[in-house]
Length: 145
Image (cartoon, rainbow, N blue to C red; front, side, top):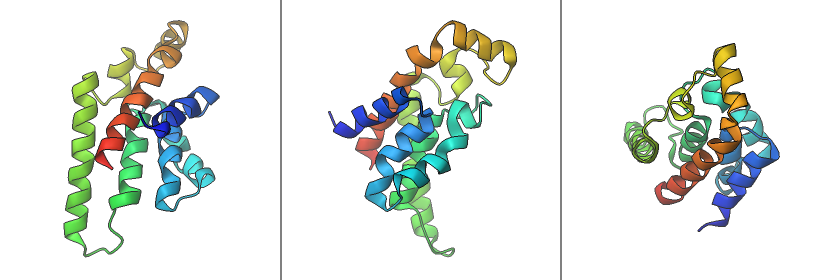
C-alpha cells in the first residue's frame, strides 16, 4: 500500500475536504505546489461545493490525472482524447467499487438541502463513509497514474 494513500486519508482527517485531500497528495509530483492544490480543490468538496454532485475525492483524482496527462496545446486532440479516456477509466473503477460517483448516492442523502446535510451530520456520514471514498480514489489513482 502506498504512503500516498494513507497521506490522502490523513489529510482528509485533518479537516480538508475530500477533493483537497486527493489532489494535494499527488499535485507535487506534477509541479503544482500543495498550497495551490488545496486552493484549487477547495470548492470541489461535498460533490462540488456541497451540491451533492460528483464526489470531491473523484474530482480531486481527475484533476491529478489532468496534471499528469493533460494537454497544453489547444490543437493537441490526441492527448486530450487520451486524458479523457484515463478520466473515464478512473471514474468507472470508482463507480464499480462504490455504485456511483455522485456524492448524494454515496452518502444516501442529498447534502445540497439543509435537511440532507443535517441527516448526513447526525448519522456521521462524513466521518464514517468519506474516508473510504478518499482511500478508494487514491488507490485507483495509484493504478491509473
